[in-house]
Length: 114
Length: 114
Image (cartoon, rainbow over all chains, first blue to last red; front, side, top):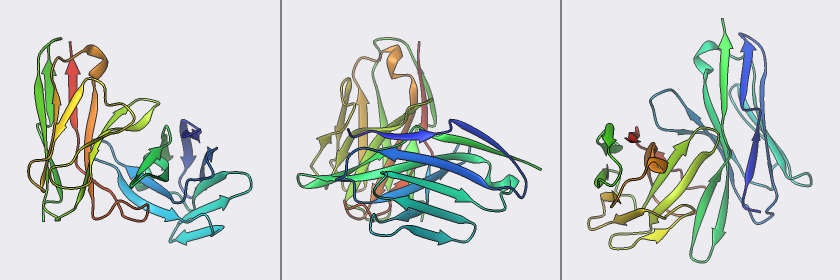
């Protein structure tokens, strides 16, 4: 019940296209949903995040869509660029006891072809 | 500011050997975390610390020990390495423990256990 399921595992998109990565969860106690971006050989870095009382959040070309009733959220990358080629992780935050933990999805490797 | 640094970057161990991974942060963060990243499994929390002198178990703590003697350092120990511990290890830190407190990741340590 603490899992976050992410799909697809890999994605190839042409430059200028839209990249869409989906995540689903079961535990309704999750209360914050960040996305992390990881370039090869580097650590993950926070890209964008959303609270469950918001249906959409946009930052530049990156948008999170959140469907609380379906327990799903997705990352949309508009006008995808070769520089967006990276691995993307969705995550969900669970507060339990006196602290909280991030539960990560399995990751999606995005390749944007020039 | 260096952010989060990890030592070493690469290491090869034989089964049964021990080693310590060092994580250091210069952001005066209270919370520190150790994750392992394996293909298709995302990042999984090994241990974490909510402050100097405290440690707690995460999702996959078996075979690992940690210590947080100084606020800026978080050590991950493998007492008797096993091939199943071959992975990329990431340290992270955050100012607080809530979902909106961004976790800052180090560059990772690639460990191979033969």
